[in-house]
Image (tube, rainbow, N blue to C red):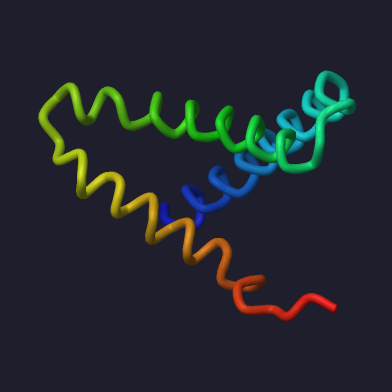
Length: 86
Protein backbone atom coordinates (compact mmCIF):
# COMPACT_ATOMS: atom_id res chain seq x y z
CA UNK A 1 0.00 0.00 0.00
CA UNK A 2 2.83 2.43 0.89
CA UNK A 3 4.46 1.89 -2.52
CA UNK A 4 1.15 2.60 -4.24
CA UNK A 5 0.83 5.88 -2.33
CA UNK A 6 4.38 6.94 -3.18
CA UNK A 7 3.95 5.94 -6.83
CA UNK A 8 0.80 8.05 -6.98
CA UNK A 9 2.55 10.99 -5.32
CA UNK A 10 5.53 10.83 -7.66
CA UNK A 11 3.49 10.35 -10.84
CA UNK A 12 0.82 12.96 -10.17
CA UNK A 13 3.27 15.41 -8.59
CA UNK A 14 5.43 15.29 -11.70
CA UNK A 15 2.36 15.70 -13.92
CA UNK A 16 1.26 18.76 -11.94
CA UNK A 17 4.73 20.27 -12.12
CA UNK A 18 4.94 19.64 -15.88
CA UNK A 19 1.61 21.38 -16.37
CA UNK A 20 2.67 24.32 -14.19
CA UNK A 21 5.99 24.67 -16.03
CA UNK A 22 4.30 24.43 -19.45
CA UNK A 23 1.66 27.01 -18.58
CA UNK A 24 4.25 29.35 -17.09
CA UNK A 25 6.36 29.03 -20.23
CA UNK A 26 3.34 29.79 -22.42
CA UNK A 27 1.74 32.54 -20.37
CA UNK A 28 4.60 34.12 -18.42
CA UNK A 29 7.53 33.96 -20.83
CA UNK A 30 7.91 37.75 -20.75
CA UNK A 31 8.21 37.83 -16.95
CA UNK A 32 11.47 37.69 -15.03
CA UNK A 33 12.62 34.34 -13.63
CA UNK A 34 11.81 35.56 -10.12
CA UNK A 35 8.27 36.60 -11.07
CA UNK A 36 7.66 33.37 -12.99
CA UNK A 37 8.89 31.25 -10.05
CA UNK A 38 6.75 33.28 -7.64
CA UNK A 39 3.67 32.67 -9.81
CA UNK A 40 4.40 28.93 -10.14
CA UNK A 41 4.94 28.62 -6.40
CA UNK A 42 1.69 30.50 -5.73
CA UNK A 43 -0.21 28.10 -8.00
CA UNK A 44 1.35 25.08 -6.31
CA UNK A 45 0.52 26.44 -2.85
CA UNK A 46 -3.10 27.03 -3.84
CA UNK A 47 -3.28 23.32 -4.73
CA UNK A 48 -1.73 22.41 -1.35
CA UNK A 49 -4.16 24.68 0.50
CA UNK A 50 -7.12 23.11 -1.30
CA UNK A 51 -5.93 19.64 -0.28
CA UNK A 52 -5.70 20.75 3.37
CA UNK A 53 -8.89 22.82 3.47
CA UNK A 54 -11.25 19.88 4.13
CA UNK A 55 -9.13 18.53 6.99
CA UNK A 56 -8.96 21.96 8.61
CA UNK A 57 -12.72 22.46 8.14
CA UNK A 58 -13.20 19.12 9.92
CA UNK A 59 -11.12 20.25 12.87
CA UNK A 60 -7.59 19.08 12.10
CA UNK A 61 -4.83 21.16 13.63
CA UNK A 62 -3.76 23.69 11.00
CA UNK A 63 -0.29 24.06 12.54
CA UNK A 64 0.35 20.32 12.43
CA UNK A 65 -0.67 20.16 8.77
CA UNK A 66 1.61 23.09 7.91
CA UNK A 67 4.45 21.41 9.84
CA UNK A 68 3.84 18.20 7.87
CA UNK A 69 4.09 20.14 4.61
CA UNK A 70 7.26 21.83 5.79
CA UNK A 71 8.89 18.53 6.74
CA UNK A 72 8.04 17.00 3.35
CA UNK A 73 9.35 20.05 1.53
CA UNK A 74 12.66 19.72 3.38
CA UNK A 75 12.85 16.02 2.49
CA UNK A 76 12.07 16.69 -1.17
CA UNK A 77 14.66 19.47 -1.38
CA UNK A 78 17.31 17.58 0.55
CA UNK A 79 19.10 16.30 -2.59
CA UNK A 80 19.81 19.86 -3.76
CA UNK A 81 19.99 21.69 -0.43
CA UNK A 82 23.44 22.88 0.44
CA UNK A 83 24.88 22.33 -3.03
CA UNK A 84 27.29 25.05 -4.01
CA UNK A 85 26.65 26.90 -7.23
CA UNK A 86 29.58 27.77 -9.43
